[in-house]
Length: 496
Image (tube, rainbow, N blue to C red; front, side):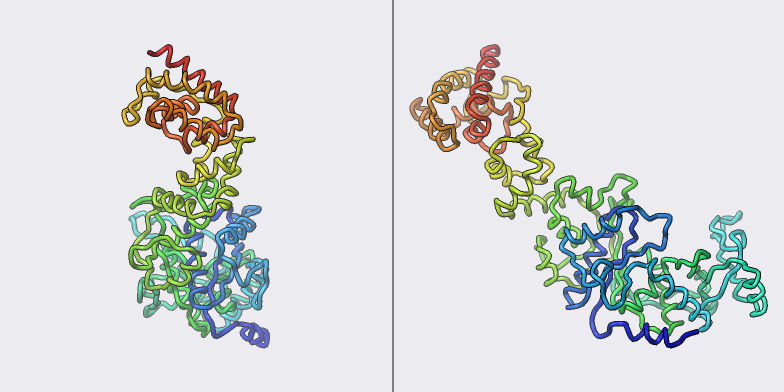
């Protein structure tokens, strides 16, 4: 065994600063829990002046999805979670893709066997752990460690025969193991409750647990953020660290993100991924802000924070043990606040693809200005303005409005009177339309609402619209406005 190689690897490890990592498996999409893990790891690094690393964990080749790595990096970029080291930017402890580090895991497994912390297991599947419940209802049996008792001669004989094997961690059968977690505190487990888990599979690739420990050590990771479902694996991690004689990083096991009190978020059950939320019209900034509060609180009543502001207030004390409920209504509220905070130019740019689905060729900037105060999600936009493309079917009863003191007879009179007014407007622009309508209401001696309400119903077919009668008329153009007012008159004549 080349001990110089191990010494050289140890010399590469950065020391002296906070280092966190986001280590996703490229299995196709970034769900909310993944994004939160990445965000917390990023916030810890940024709030403490540290380094944020991205590592791709692709050792489970059966679950890999083509293009998934691109999705991961695209999501991180859109969310503003820039990384300091990773497969795409390099760094001092690369490579940052696990299948490119296969040699490391094998060598460290061999070193661990030398130290007595691991052994070769030649057992077939039927001789290994049985995950099925026993007939008497007792828990599933663990692997009994029989190969750890093989003599060196027996091992050599099996190797010479080319018998396949895995490498297992050798768990001490006596005593207990205590690990510390930032959120859950100290947790102690009895060693005889732990299994001799597989470290290197028969194909030579490491298991998730072993690769994590080796990579976190060699990359100098000081804070490990992961889901609380990995709490049960932490004692095994600690035993590996101790077997190697390495420092143990700080563990931060975050609570699960739930759909409700009983169910975790699940793509299988239709719960949204980050990409789904973007497709539904949520802004990245709003998603990040909301996700930050799923299991963490800055204290106080304030909830809306930019990413920069989150780095200034984030601290580990705010993390909670309790599961976090994903409340889409609250995310929608956040999103509406973020939309209203955008500059007019930024909102127009974000809204343009949605506007053009139903209002192509119209004044998109005017439409955007009408929508911004009323928009909660970008995907709502087509439904808010589809009346511009085609007048919907509506009932004549819509012309009646108690607040405006308008009934169908008054509405008919107003629409008849406005036709020559519209015909006399020289420049069909919103300002001129507005002045003409206001002047006509004054000439009739009626309140503005008495005239504007029936005009708005006639040109939109709706009681609630983004924008008033003058703005809708400006968007429709003179010819379409006159056509729709004429249809309204016909509808009222048949009703009164």
